Length: 171
Ligand SMILES: [Fe+2]
Ligand SMILES: [Fe+2]
Image: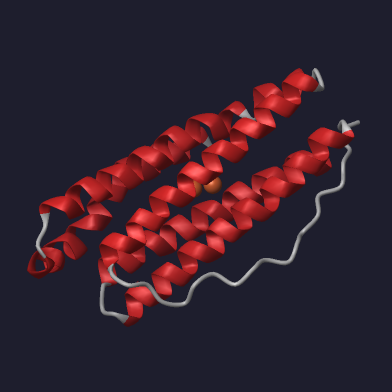
C-alpha cells in the first residue's frame, strides 16, 4: 500500500504534468495561429509527452494500491508576447517542475519509500533533458534576429529528433 504522504505528493505531480501538457498545448495553438508551423509542431509534441508523464504517474499510483486523482486544471495563457519570451517561460516552467520532482524525492526519503524513490528517478533524469532542451532552444534564439525566425521555425523540429529518441528509450 502506497504511503499516504507519498500518494498525496504524487497526485500533486499529476496536476503539474497535466498542466504542463495544457500549457504547451496553449503555446502550440498560439504559435500555429501566428504562422510558426515548426514551433507549433515542437510544442504539440511536447504537450503529448507531458500527457504521457501524467499517465505514467496515474498508473504508478493505482498500481501501487493508491488512488490517482484527475484534478481540475487552471487555464493556461492564451497568447504570448513573442517566441523568445514564450521559450523563456518554457524554461522557467521546467525549472519549477524539476523543483517539484525534487520535493517528491525528499518525501520518499522521509517516508522510507525506497520503491517510489527508485521509480521517480526516471523523472529526475527526464528533467535534466527537459531543462537542457529548453536551454538549447533559448541559446539558438539568442543568436537570431527577428527576421531569422523563419529559419529557426523551419529547423526547430530537427532539434526534437534526438531528444524524442532519448525519451522513447527511457519510457
Ligand atoms: Fe513532464
Ligand atoms: Fe517537461
